[in-house]
Length: 379
Image (cartoon, rainbow, N blue to C red; front, side, top):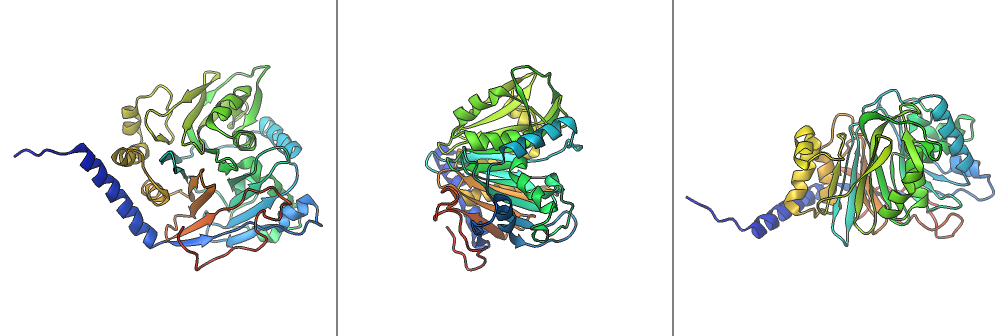
């Protein structure tokens, strides 16, 4: 017995199935609106930043800690450059594993970027709103341990203290984020590579490069041009074990890898792109699917829908490739400039951030009220 299968119908059926699954997941999820605070302007920038802390959830067990929002005020350029020099002088990353998953998908009218951070050693999760005086405003995710806080520390308790000043560094240690133009960037681990210093290139720590991309670029092409002035490092000043996916509001995306003393630019062959922890440049798609089950799972799902995925379908994909160490999962929407995220694999609760982009000091800037929980409607 033979069967004639219409490819168009097969695609439509797969697309409907994915959205039905996502719809069922959505029906069971609570959407919690969260907002940043703006303390009184009478305080110094440093004091306002510390007083802006919003504790969304408190500390829990080891490696499953809090979630905090922080609004950052003032110019941090000098502070960030000092931290970059500290990283050059004293290697800070001792572990080379970061089993993250990132993808770009959606449509031209509604692109999305999905991201799992899969290293469970985060301490608390810090979500920062940062507006540099001469750059673009952005939201980014940071691990509290990177700025010197041990596990199970309630960050609200350090406000106004000397230790609280470490919170000013949160935007420097951005692991992923989105800026006011929809430019989105995320990092994933990869095998270590080495590089030689060059007189005309600046050495920048992995997360500082993410910070500068968010601060200074509006599109994929601007980001590609911008990075040419820099050599990234993390393990020490001569080595690097990460790569990036950058996407923008137009739906374009690109993967950036640095090896053999040069940047490798990987553009998508389809309407979507996937990044995990395997090198991508020059590697056939079939090999990547064979080498990494997460790459294969995401790619096969997007194959079936021709890259079409809304926020719910994107979050469902992130759940399917989650691992033991997954601590935050976020779907960025660069067209609408908002994001939904879950933390510590509590998939039945999604936090939502939106409306964050007017400059600080503007009366329409980040909300002055605290976190809104419960009773939130689906958007």
